[in-house]
Length: 425
Length: 66
Image (tube, chains in turn orange, blue):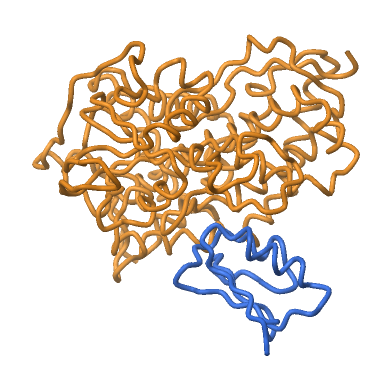
């Protein structure tokens, strides 16, 4: 047996000769015109992006911004689908629209494979993960997830007011993914910091972002080294042992995939659970119907995923081109808004309404094409169990103070503060 | 009536085997596959149509037999 010394040195130290990528001036502040100056990081967007998207879809429909060094925002379903399918002309080299573009040499692997990867490498990196995230594979975690949901509600302990985002929705994906990766459950609060930096701290100075991103990779490297010394039956050990093209993965691939699973596995499902509870808290008729007809939940859940799709992705334009009426330049961002696609009236009847028994629902909350969310089966299991247990234990609840609800800004949107009244009013 | 999945279009969303588990199943990587002989019994026609109309990739076809 040969000693696995891939992680003895910090893999980041060997990257010194690589190009640095490009930065642009950071522009923040109120948006003047959403068609020409959009920013998904401003409070107006975070609070309610849907009227903005609906307006753009009618009058634009591909918005532009000079912020972030230049980017585009298609708002029609058809355009979002076209970008998602066109991996020839749109790269996933960076999927978070920010003020920094990683070097072109980073393609086709990207920093967090396979979400940041382009074909043909993408297919092979993704294939490693697929068996771990099938519906059958994640079903084995349902019992533990259900027990966790019950224990979170047990801890409410007779209170009449709780923050459902902080005290319930957040912990469910956090604990599930920590278990899968084999991380200590008590490290959860650190994960929240990593997530806020990766996804919400986009307009911070680059040095600060890199410093904080460094902390995430420090944490992952410590976990990897511990797993090299003490192999376990978990995803971290699986990735350490995984092989591609006849050899073990590059250390940066192992750590990058772990970063992806940690960040993408938590924030997104947390948002979906929170947004669903928010809707039910402010819509007594839907809440009462789901309590009375629990068999409707799988259908209702798809509607919550459609109408409150948490995730927006990004792409980078590969070469200058004329695309659907606009002139895109190489290295422009494209914000791939699945939420906007999901509310396109050309694709959905009553697109702006929440119809919990909508039977035909070809929504794209988990994306389209080769980058379909690899964790979608896990997310659906967690969302279903979280809502089942909540509705069973707390059938009567409402919004405590609608104005106190806060939403995450950026590419993953969901409630971050959700004060609910629980029990009879 | 028969169902078929276009493997070039399927990306493993799993809506078909969620909605019509009698007609579809998942393979080891989560891609949808037709279970059995692809024939749709009359009592499964409704869920077969749901699988078709909910597939985000439009990867499923219903083939009416002559």
